[in-house]
Length: 183
Image 1 (cartoon, rainbow, N blue to C red):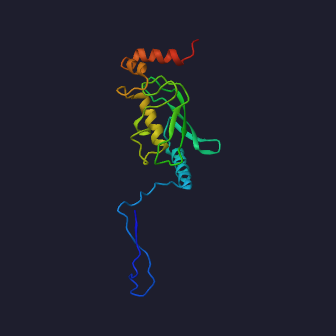
Image 2 (tube, one colour):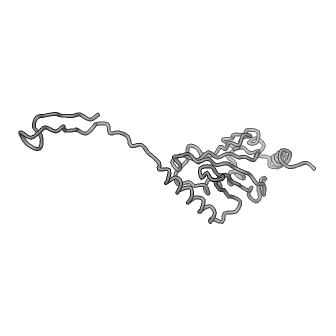
Image 3 (spheres, helix red, strand yellow):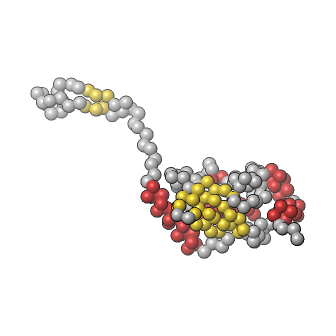
């Protein structure tokens, strides 16, 4: 807390009107990390352009209608995985303090996977406690695409999928049973 000293003399000398002297506080006020909406908009526009120009196969995302804070994404399962060629839809919602806080990312397409639950929630450390403002939409989508074929079974969100993962033949049968049309 700042203290005020009202002595009758001050640096201006004797006889001059007294001015309060403010001593520095022992506990400086914390500086709040504020984010300018314009800078968030610029960042998201820049990320959209970078994603479109990247040429990465199997991932894409675009703003939903006219709202740059809500995107729809697509991930295609990687080659040589049980998810190969399967297209998954995602929703991405960016907070007003992005990139200092991660976006909320959810699967809109059902996916039987150790790190995704049936409600579309994703267990991925970079979307939670390992988030860094250096990450971008491209990084997020590539990480989720990679997680499809290489799940973290030691930290599952779907324990049934995690227990089956070790037996890829049984896992594949379960995925086909759940998602492939019977004909």
